Length: 261
Image 1 (cartoon, one colour):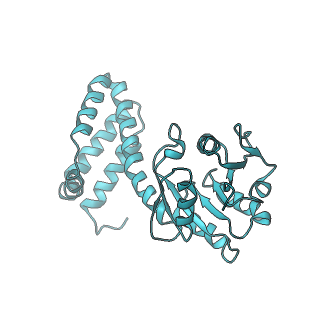
Image 2 (image 1 turned 60 degrees about the vertical axis):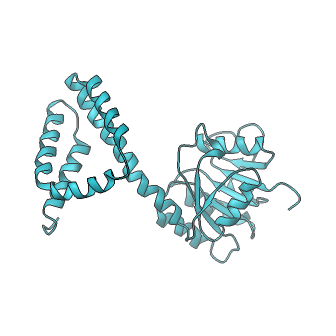
Image 3 (image 1 turned 120 degrees about the vertical axis):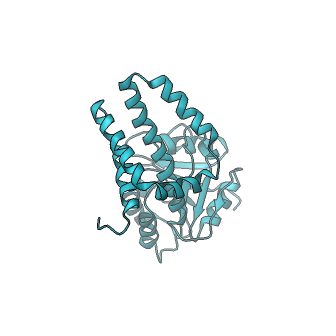
């Protein structure tokens, strides 16, 4: 391809706008549409999704899990065979598979792209994992702009599945920290707990994964009672014990795996 690839951005919010600005700065031919915000400088505005993708070689859908199927449906009338549809949304694997099914037979392969870190401050430097029939082509297009994409051998849904499994851990840790700190604030112990959590996080290592798995099962009964007490304390402090109660219930299930739910 002698000319720069034409890239359409569907969704120009926080993530989409940063990616669009980086592409423009690198000399890409970018056009975009977002019903809520105007495109950043250098991005050619389009009236709707169909107009945005009409002459695009690569489409980046960067809106939301809920909006991704709508954006595809609206773009279909003018989506050209040979284009690549890259879905960068954090949607369930089934949504990614549904997008691929909707494009089956149209000559438009889907690249399921998982953004493995927050986009603000990183833009195109955000680590990306891609799967699907045309993940290699997606990676090839972005490689022309100096962007590295890790390609996973698997169908649409494979890349986002890995991100979401990570999210169970990372967002779960964040939720636990938020709840614990809310309780500590209410108890007048915020400085102590902040320091204690920081020290615990500093000492974590890969071996702790097995310690968590084995310990939770081995000590499930005792820890169920401990987390029940923790949940009760949070409630007494006026803090809804969402994470503590979930941990209590999970430990209870581990203590009695054969008990009907």
